[in-house]
Length: 398
Image (cartoon, rainbow, N blue to C red; front, side, top):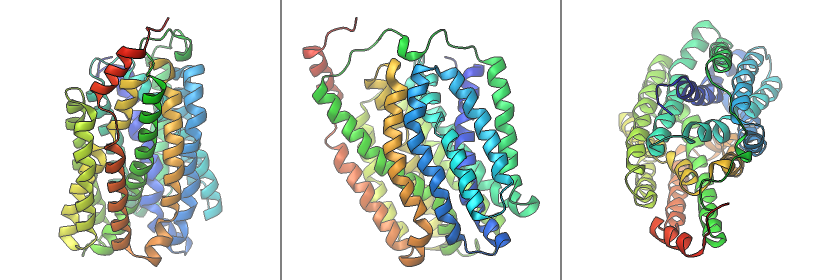
């Protein structure tokens, strides 16, 4: 599949929109809190439903993607995200917005287990394809961080949801018109890869799931919490929301480029050799971030986000490398349900945790989470060992 085909373009836009709409609330809750006369820390738990459904809904979305077909699920994704964003804009209190965000999270859960397998199913260079797709998703976060506060303050917080919502509805129409339907659902296709031996598969899946949980905790905390981190600890950002928005846009935009480099490396080198140093280097950077303020913190945030975003392609790359296309959506759905389901609790606790412990302690905890990821990845079997085990015990699928 060409990177310039309508299918690839719309699937990459879908990734951007998925993350854009998912984090608008996190970057607008300061404005919303002012309008409603509450503290932003009171609003953070109401994002829990969205992030929980983003993970838990992946179980259903992944299964339906393999059984119903990925084309129809992507149409549902674009339409559902657009409609739910408009519903959020109609909310007038925190309970309503919590319910609407939960609905949005259910539709947001469709993209990763459906859109990414659809994108890579015919890719010649899956690592780079995943990298480009990851860049698109992270640019969605960068755009949300860069414009949400500005739009919310200039035109009202509702417009911060209306604009991406309308874009999603336009994409839904474009997807129906421009993207050809599948001839058959993935689950009905013949296997093109050999299944791994059960012992190797269990080990790979356990490590993949654990690192998905730890990676999701780090990803969700940083993407949802960086705004308040900079607002609190970088001089000048508190007084000037436009400056804060620009700082966040710079951080996420630069960090997004890491996925292109990592994607190229994935196509050339063993996953473990690339993944281990990326995860390990996060540890000292989070520790440094816990101790510095002002522009030193801004520079450190760029560095740790380069590594956080750079680590994102690996789980999808493992699935492409080890799992046949006919069941990739289901495996991805299980991985996401566990990873995002657990990490969503962390995001719900950002406000209360910052209030009680402060950002320095939480950044130290992120360093510990990153180190636990490193230890788990040390147990990942090398690709050479996997190939040897497969050659010794597997028979071609019939």
